[in-house]
Image: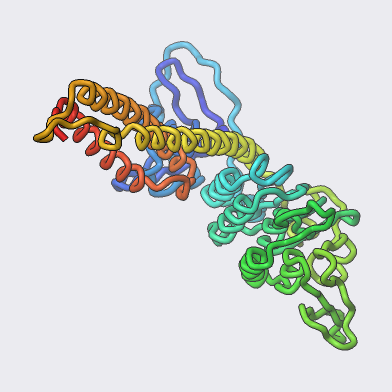
Length: 445
């Protein structure tokens, strides 16, 4: 978190007249200036300068119109105490020229398995922060063996829907399988000379034979989506298809001006890069040769020179922190999925118990005229009580499902469980329990 120079006085904390401040615009029309103390997904804690006194305020995200950096307005001089007070050294404000020339960037590490160490929450948080702070450049440093499709797909959507003021670059050590979604979603790709990209084996249906066997229909859909990602960022869609679809071919040929064209079908005179026996993987030199990206073995700090930017400085470590928080979100997601699976098992068991104890399905002796015998009346009540007990257990399971569904929605897991289904289950179960109670003491059949 960025901190600003302040002057401490005994009678309250007052901002220095030449310091920096953030400008917070609220949806009710108020405009406050001060310093951000803490940011979360749901709230913002803000030290606001009001009548020359700093007041700490907390706002919900829904109350905030915008947040931007800016110079603090000149504060009216406060009356000083009789004795001198110690002050903190003030940092001079940057000149307009310095501010205009400064190119800030965030580093967002994509490291580990998608769905376990890499997920959409951290990426979304980092990109939103960059947009709020006016940080125009985000560098994804990628070293991943791939992972779960849902995580790659959601991250791809997050990158595609980011604020257009934020430019994204990929710096690849290894972008295998699901990781290609992040790499191909960036407008420029840089790769280490010994790096690799491709080999989307995460989409395989089975590898029990020792070879990657891919479900053709699923992978065709995924390939089509990834081709769209490539088209938006100026990458060859044919390359994406060959990286995802097992059995896809890829041919390349020069255009006579140093560029390459590609095709997934046979092209006379073209070089075959991939065939039906493999899923395309490219090395660093191949990535550069075929125009997908550039070989770059320098540091992130020196990437600015490669981009042609005279000033290139790291804004903060927010990107790394966001991804760490995102890992906690993934652990929460995994725990919720595990809880849902266990509750589904309980749901099925208690539903079966209800069906097994329905009182009307028992065997009863009936007197002439329809009255049950005394043993049959006892049996009716026993089955009714057993069925009611099972209904109560199932009702508890439904409450637990509703509880974890609410948590899932807060994590953005919109398809976790339909609350309308939960409502129907609860309504039907309540009606059944009411009927069982009404009929418990019946003596006729």
